[in-house]
Image (cartoon, rainbow, N blue to C red; front, side):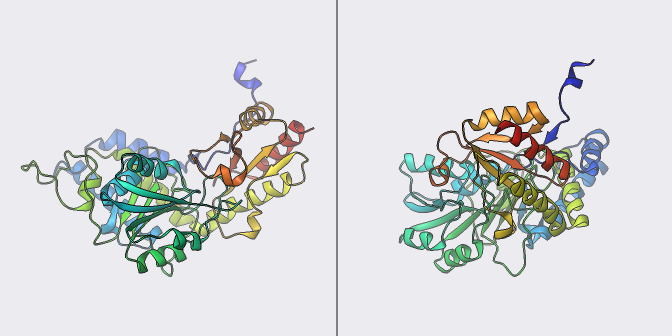
Length: 389
């Protein structure tokens, strides 16, 4: 017997980290762009170079439609972490005060902490509750005369709870500060609406709920916000000058864009448009609900996530801790018993665990995706019952 045959069927349930598998069109377009085009975007006027430009132009339009914004304001950094760093380092000046939240990801908190340690900014991290939810009144209480930026995650990558973005963005705008939204766990899962205010800056990776590949991200910047460049280099424009161009897009898209990844992200967005974000999110959420219902009565399992039926639509995340086992131990046993692959630990979120009561090792996080099904739920629940016997 082949050694691989001894292993249970692979059940990938770490979609909050990276969605997998991808729609078939994503893989096809990714390979096609590498094999048949293979050029550098924005650096030529021959046929394939023009085709590459058209791929980028269409992607901006597709992302803008999902976000209900203008495509002219969509930039394509190579990762959400880079996009968040560009925003943070690009808009803050020495002496500025920043408000962030305990529910934020380290991709936001670490660059802010870095600037604080260097004495360049003042930072207040407002608390969250036992769900990871941030009370907008906490943001108001933290406000100072020199508050320049309010940063928050749209949805927690640990608990899946969705923040009151409308209230926080509106109060930030009223006070003439800048709002920065990390949409890593929302764009592609939480429908954006024209009726809701868009944060001044929104960042999301391409490889999560937008169903693209690694090496892509999207960054929306409201008209009128100016960035200092985080890095300098070639942009394909004004190449006869040693000075960087002043347009925001040129400051973000320095160097060579990954054409196959950009094309694949476009295919992922197109798949979402065809299926409908609401429909995709509902199917994922139903699986999360079924998993929650199956786990809630297992003795020794403490669900960190609140009942999905009681909250607003968020990413399909279930977090838990188990009596007698560390989160990594549970993760290993889930794969050994049922082939279930999940994330364990602190999930790159340094502050939230103090409020969740999970500072001793973090949580086990199960996150369903568009290609998960009810058999995956059954596998998780069955394996957890065996583990907790």
